[in-house]
Length: 59
Image (cartoon, rainbow, N blue to C red; front, top):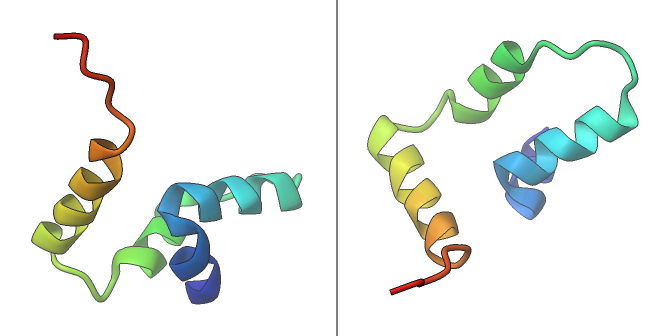
């Protein structure tokens, strides 16, 4: 699980797992395992970095 997260990121890892498994997945449990060693500040900082590259400036 950690290798998927590190190489694909959270969204990519969840997408991979959803494509691999056709059974219902408990995403709350998956998220708890992915984020258990991180602070909320670390999670938000990484999310902000990922969003910066994907936003389009319409200004």
